[in-house]
Each structure stands twice: as structure tokens, then as C-alpha cells.
Length: 115
Image 1 (cartoon, rainbow, N blue to C red):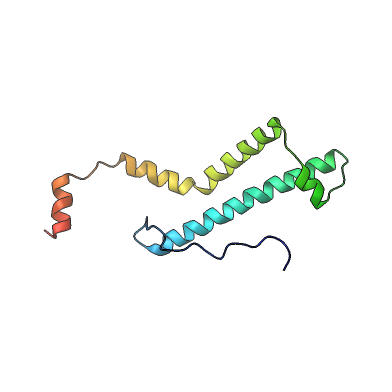
Image 2 (image 1 turned 60 degrees about the vertical axis):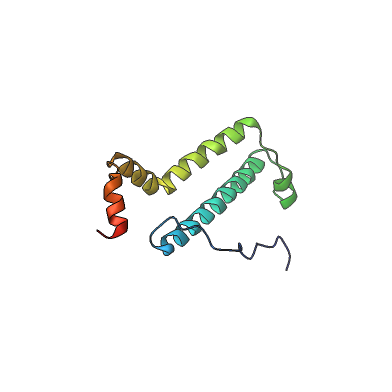
């Protein structure tokens, strides 16, 4: 098989952030897909810029392309907007939790003790 090899997977248990471990798995998939989408978007942007410049579009030309500061700034802005859309639900949930009053220490202890 040609090309880079993808890692087979991490070793050990993943940290649990949610009551349902399946939610964490779905979130991990979304994050991985968002990362791949951002890379694909940058490569596509490179192809468009090569075409606009009248340059041949080859794998080598894409690999050699070095974006200037203005291109990096533009790509960073796109990435920030993209991630804010992808993670909007999580941001809204965090804000909702921040507005809720924290439980009293005594109530938490009683809940843990089963009383």
C-alpha cells in the first residue's frame, strides 16, 4: 500500500467525560472528522490558489505551496468559524451550566452517601 499509514489506535482507556461512554466516542469521531475537513479545506484552497496563479496543479506543487501571512490569517479565520459551528452545541451547554447555581457541598455529600 502506498502513502502514509494511519495509526491503528491509542493504547489504554480513553478518559471518560460523559455519563454515557458512547457520547465520548461520537465526540471523538466528530473531532477527528473536523480535523480532516480542515486539512482538506486548506488543500483545496491551495489548489484554487495554484489555478488562479496559472500554476500546474500537481501533488508536488501542492506540497511545495507555502502560504503567506495573509493566506494563513484567512485560513485561521475560516477554521475558527468552522469550529464554532461544529462545537456550537457544546458551547451552549457550557454556558447553560455556567448559569446554573452550583450545588451545595452538603447536598453533594448526602447524594454520594445515598441519603
